[in-house]
Length: 321
Image 1: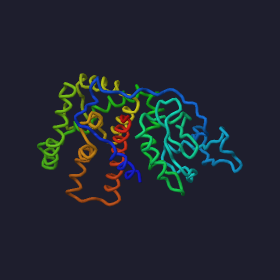
Image 2 (image 1 turned 45 degrees about the vertical axis):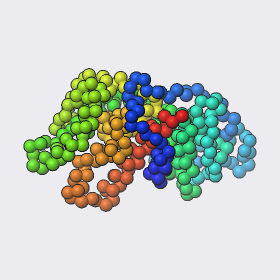
Image 3 (image 1 turned 30 degrees about the horizontal axis):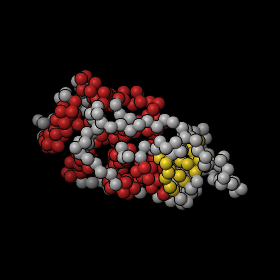
Image 4 (image 1 turned 60 degrees about the vertical axis):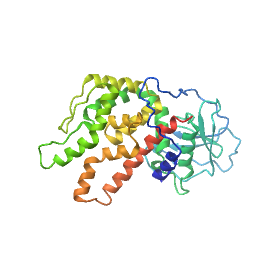
């Protein structure tokens, strides 16, 4: 379901390769930290309890501003959190005119810390609304709502932990997937080395052009040490991102095990299919040689497609006006 929703959302996004978001002159979305005053009842999450969903009391009145539906924090961990309690999902402009919100019937959707889920674009609000619309009556399944999860991360986690996220990404550069090179003089890995040179070297050339530093490649599975100038250049780029962009880059790196691939998508160098092929390069070679394990490789591929597509779509829709 998640893959289907992401696919539909991505069809509405026009990804322009010629435009680079890596330059200092790239357009940034304005921050929307202001809190909106909600006149309607709100759909919220409860961080302090793991109680089941509390559906509106039988005698509750719709015009009572205190009415709300509380969900446990397991929403962010992937557990089924309860039956669908709403009928209609809509979007509307935020009360202060700064951003867009999602409505479940008459309730305003909120983040786990009970902040209004204010989104930077109508396109992203509609995509998240579609995730809620496609939930089944039998249960709300957060693992089919990757855009909602990324939105909560961008609104709540990134502003509080931005320095730590950037520090983490900078550490990961030294163990980046694209910097690893299979030994050329080994009969067992020489074919892998040839494919790596053919497919990954163009990305390394882009890194040198973009950041002015030629990256080092290595054969150790423990990684190597990249030039400090390259690290500083990447750091400067990451510090220019807004919260939504940094959340996307962090999610992409976590799935790809590569800061370079994440930045390649962010800067428009790589598309979703290009990134997935690079991430799975060595494993796909093994599958071609030994065969695909059903219930193993196929599930891994499907999950990777959802994670990479979700973060890329979130990034693109966040930039739509």
